[in-house]
Each structure stands twice: as C-alpha cells, then as structure tokens.
Amino acid sequence: KNEVEQSPQNLTAQEGEFITINCSYSVGISALHWLQQHPGGGIVSLFMLSSGKKKHGRLIATINIQEKHSSLHITASHPRDSAVYICAVARWDNDMRFGAGTRLTVKP
Amino acid sequence: KAGVTQTPRYLIKTRGQQVTLSCSPISGHRSVSWYQQTPGQGLQFLFEYFSETQRNKGNFPGRFSGRQFSNSRSEMNVSTLELGDSALYLCASSLKSGNAGELFFGEGSRLTVL
Image (cartoon, rainbow over all chains, first blue to last red; front, side):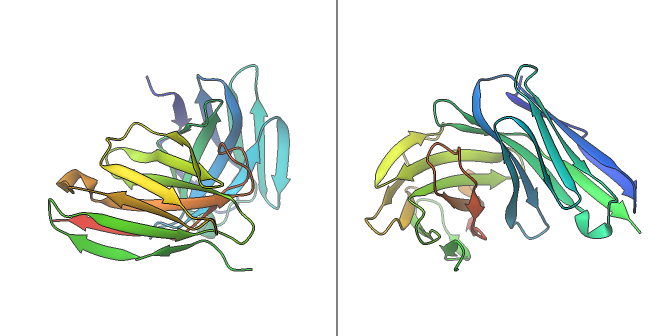
C-alpha cells in the first residue's frame, strides 16, 4: 500500500465548477505539499501545510493531522487550472513521498 | 530574483555511460533536493543536501550520487547508466531542510538513455 494515496486519479470538470482533490497518508509527517505540474514537466508549489488551512486566490488547502488527510479545493475552476496535482509528504526522517497525482481537465 | 536553474535541459546518453546534472538554487537557499520522475514510478525522492551535507537519501542504488558546493549549487551524478534511468530529473531549493519548507522547482533535466 502506498504511503500517500490521492483521489480521484482523473477528474474532468466544467468551467466554474468547485473541485476537490483528496490526499491520505499513513506516516508521520513534518509537512504536506500540494504541487501543480503542467504538460512539459515544470512543477510549481501551491501550498505547504503543517496544520489548518491556507488560501491563495481560488485555491484552498486543508489538512487534518489526526486523520492524516488533506484536501485541495479549487473554486470557480478555469481551463487554465488543467494540470496534474500532486500531494507530497515530508516524513520526519527527511524522506519525501509522493502521491500518484490527479489529472484535472477543466472544459470551457 | 532568479529561479532555480537546471542544466542541461535535455541530454541523450548510452547505456554504461555516466552523467552529471547541475542545479543552481535560488540565492540564499541552502537546501537542494533531487527527484526522479518516470511514467511508471511517478515522482521519487533521490536525496537532499543542506549546507554541503547530505541529509537523507531515497531508495536508489549507489550509482546515484550527489554533492553540494559552498555556494549551494548542487550536482547529481549517475554512473553506469541503465535504460531505466531515462527520466525527468528535478531539483528544488528551499530555505529549510527536510522538505519542510516551501519548495521551488527547476524546469528539470530530461535524460534519455539509449
């Protein structure tokens, strides 16, 4: 069983819809990262969380340390949000584990 | 402020050769971590360097090695290349070590092994 599980694997939405991507992990962590990867490979860090909730524009990320679960929400989705979203956890031993990613397609 | 720079961006090698990839972090960042991304395995952590010291290493064979210089620039080396080493190699820099700070990624070095 992977230490980091993401769902769904693929997600298609219409422009304007509210989107949620989930991440569950099974190890103790010092931080959780949400990353965005566009075609071509470049990765952008969206959020780094160790507790609570963060908001940046239309993106919101939450984490529940007790339940070992995090969610990434996109409000008023737009075609430019189409990308692969990756959850990654920084373990206490400095190792880093990644989810398999969620491929999001937002149609106009 | 310049971002993270990786060189070369693309390279082709043959089996048995060795390769060295370079990563220049954002100015002031002392942590550089390396990752391998393949279609089959996804993203995997290779190692992290902080202030010239390797902090941790992922589950990769000894053919994968790295180092960090006093100016925080880092290099990774893969010796005796295998076909399975074909991948996108990414580095990220951060103010904090242990992958516990915000990560800034380079564009990656895409390695093809023939």
